[in-house]
Length: 167
Image 1 (tube, rainbow, N blue to C red):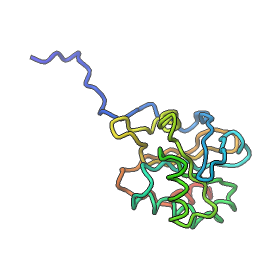
Image 2 (tube, rainbow, N blue to C red):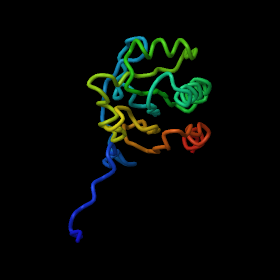
Image 3 (cartoon, rainbow, N blue to C red):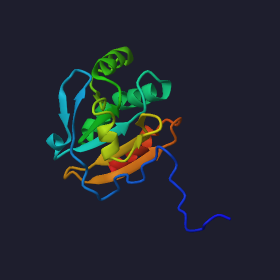
Image 4 (cartoon, helix red, strand yellow):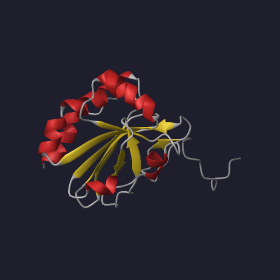
């Protein structure tokens, strides 16, 4: 007979301590595809869209980054800095950015320590070794104002993000 006091474990790989709307966004520093440092706190006074994607060189992730690049000017008009983040290395990110034709969008390498930023934000999938597909928006004062985790095989709706930012 099962003991009803035994807690059922969380599904493996899920961290339910995600940042929440109203939280202060954890600061971090990562290298982009060109090896240049991106430090979140350097962008106070602007909103920042952290667009987490599982892995480079996959079709949905490619479309997610192309959507950000295609709408870059709209983001600038809304005082928003969009960035892509995944656990891929800087050289991998560089080759992928060149392949996708990314000219403005910075894609950040959360390679080492492996997934550190994804873990800080509670979107790292331990059992897979990569992040959830998620969009997190940080406002001008460094507060989290939007958090959405998507099914791993679902492309985030860029218009949903832009409409939220236009409010």
